[in-house]
Amino acid sequence: MKNITHKKNILKVAFCIFALAVTFLSIGAIAAQSKIYIYAAASTTDTVRELIENYKKTGSSTAEFVTVFGSSGDLARQIEAGADANIFISADTKWVRYLDEKKLVEAGTSSIFASNELVIVASSKAKALKSPGKLFEALGDSNLAMGDTRSVPAGKYGMEALQYHRVWDRISGANKIAYYPDVRKVLNAVETLQCDFGIVYKTDAKMSSKVKVVYSFKGKSHSPIDYPVCVINGKNNDDVKAFMKFLKSRKAKAVLKKYGFAVK
Amino acid sequence: MHLSAEELNAVALSIKVGVWSVAVGLIPAIGLAHLLARRSFRGKSILDALIHLPLVLPPVVTGYLLIITLGRYTPLGSLLQSIGIKFAFNWKGAVVASLIMSLPLMVRAIRISIEAVDRRLEDAARTLGAGSFRIFMTITLPLSVPGIISGSILGFARSLGEFGATVTFVANIPGETQTLPLALYSYTQMPGGEMMAARLCVVSIAIAVAALAVSEIFAKRAATRIKR
Image 1 (tube, rainbow over the protein chains, first blue to last red):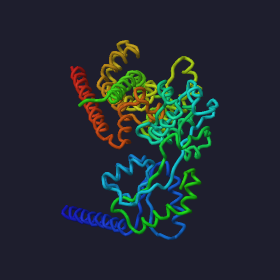
Image 2 (image 1 turned 90 degrees about the horizontal axis):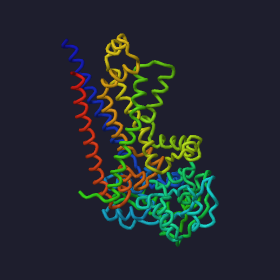
Image 3 (image 1 turned 135 degrees about the vertical axis):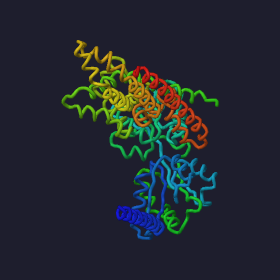
Image 4 (image 1 turned 90 degrees about the vertical axis):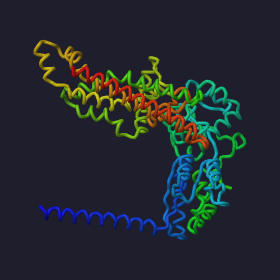
């Protein structure tokens, strides 16, 4: 009996040593590697992945990249709550401003690295749309899909553009708009024929073969769609600086253009 | 605490959708629970799995499946539209999404309750000449009331929290399909929306706690009645 308890104790001690060893080893492993955490807006997912791939190919850095994609608002709040982000790419300038007000943006690192365009996409069942001014008639008994006007940037721009073309009041007044919490869901609603028309970014429309772009809004019809990038306060280092420099290179701009972004 | 018209709308709509999804789903849930608890038949495990699917699938996928089966240009969707039932982008669609999501919880709770009913009571009634329906209505159903109550409350609670399937199926339209969690999410996506999100959070908790308390009272009453 005594022997058994003795053995049990040895096992307990051994387990504790093992657990501690694992903990220390993993902490060591995390600390040893240079990792760059990029928190980026969901609409830049494929673009940012390819940018990182291309950057790695240049061979100028051995740093490892960790990407976190989500809505700009979610990411900004996670960063505010202490998430380990080095670089933040937002789909909307207001979230960088939000972090800046909380003293979380490293001074002088924030800049616009890409711009986007707003388009109307149509499903295969949609009626022909001659001009955005005729959107109400073209909708018939179907709905217009767009991002929520207060919480989704694309929704806000869409509202501005429709107001510019003087059809907003009619369409929203007739409850013809289905609001979605992000642009990808808007695209999906048109793809699955739930809505005949949708307002999305050019970059999103480009990804889908099931919808066709029937109108591109002129830049003057809505506020500029800029994607700012910034370094989080206290998270700057040489690896981060090198990648930020790469983002402004010709190579990076070529990738952005490929996905439909406009670059200056 | 003063709620804006939009917030009140979201609260009222959530309660409406929750109540409707329980009201519509309760009888089918009792039927399915009885079937699974008392009958053995071919394809029983398939039916069981099918009912439970929304519990394990990501809600967005359930919403997508709803679009595929009940959407505008699908056979079933067109058929329903021709008799005047339209789910697209209205509160009825939100009820459908909530109902599908809460059905497994309702069926589970009721099934466990039915399985706990002493079979000898049912057998005794049968020897006394009662038919299956009479046995169910006078013995099985009354004895499983606690499960029915807790199932209803679980279903209601699940509806209150429903987000993914609803937003995918019927979008996020204020006053029409914007339930509490959808409104709450919208607020968290706005800089400066924290206060409104927090207020709705408090309201959600209050409704959930109230629903649980009510179910507790009913369940206790039912339990003491059964003991007598």
